Image (cartoon, rainbow, N blue to C red; front, top):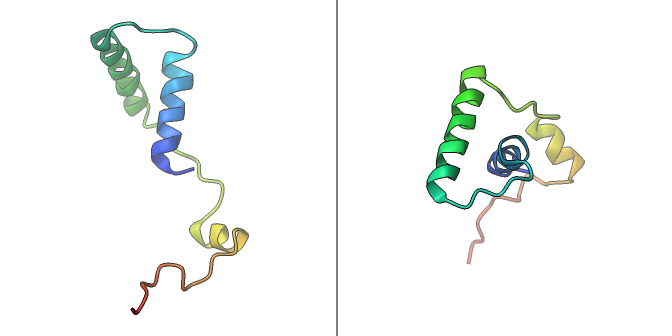
Length: 70
């Protein structure tokens, strides 16, 4: 997962839970309050491994990002 997917997952689980918020303004207020709290706590993502480890684990080669020469 990338950082944006993790952030959306956290908003869904920690902020919204199982509640349904029918109005956009109420949703924005609710998510904004959650976001301010998380930022105040300086919550960080604890990555499980480095890029180098991920490339080794998922068998990426060094040529993956090269453009074709056509």
